Length: 359
DNA sequence: AACCGACTCAACCGCGGACGA
DNA sequence: ATCGTCCGCGGTTGAGTCGGT
Image 1 (cartoon, rainbow, N blue to C red):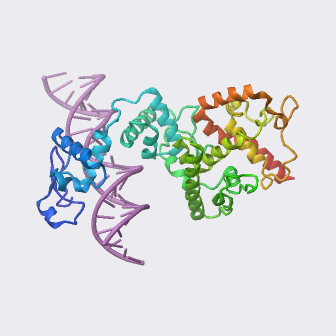
Image 2: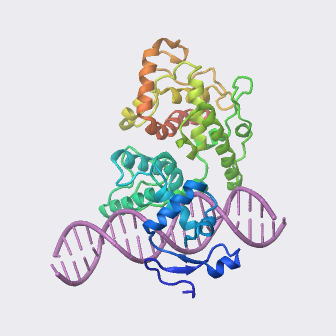
Image 3: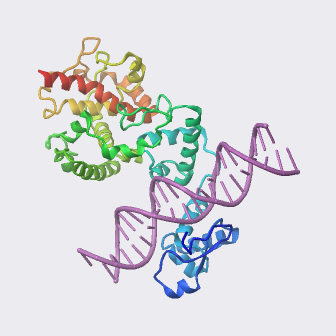
């Protein structure tokens, strides 16, 4: 333990340890640590009311509050900021956290953006507590209907594997779906929302390249969020996110995608698929995928027939009612749809890709 | 009442990115 | 290009509380 590391207690004071830019300040500044008092809260709140947030290191200089900038920022953002919710997470919030964790891993700050009034710290504490409990009880981290989006097929949803979700995105080799999206080439003339950076991504051989591609995709998806006014939740997964945006766009232009009755699939999943498979966004996405000649060369030779022997891609929008129903269904299953999208694409694309590559 | 372990949650720490000099 | 500072993030700690014995 260094001479500066004094065991902490309520109101412990320590020499200024962070800025080091002001000797005078350092000489006379003795910074408190530990729990905040009501008086300190009032000083900080008053400061923010008058000066706004930011420049936290100035707080102690301007107010005489014996707290470092970091401590002030934390106290403000976790306790004093208006509109913060207090108390236990309700059922809806709990479920949201679980869903978000399945999507993002330990991205507490990002998760907090999706849960108004909740802080990253609260969410982190909730998740860690929950994880402990479920481990102890021998329960899986995620309920059956929530799958971690990344590594669906590779890692088990096991109770003793609490950390892998946060670390998988950088290390895993690309899946067929990843490759599909990375190689996804849109026709410039036909698609007004053509995105050059996606079009140009073809090399996924190095993780460094892939990281850089992801960064670019992320930027693209941010742009699309603005264009399509989609919720920020998608930002965690740029490819799916982008696909959704794209799908939503195309869904307004194209007839609904056919039912997947005749797609090879696990029967136990049938109900799950049935409820989401024809949602407009997925529909549009799949349509856009299937009609890309660069991916599937014989786009005219439509690969699937429906149970009724029709090709609904050729139907007019006569089933507008059904589309509307599916729209509401999709909204209800909004989050589930995101996980299902990847499953769906695997289910649809893989047999077809296999068929083409083996012939 | 006293003890003790489990639990919660506020707060701290170290690190890395952004930015300006 | 380098350095220093600020800020935000995720991981960790530990004081206080609760519940069981």
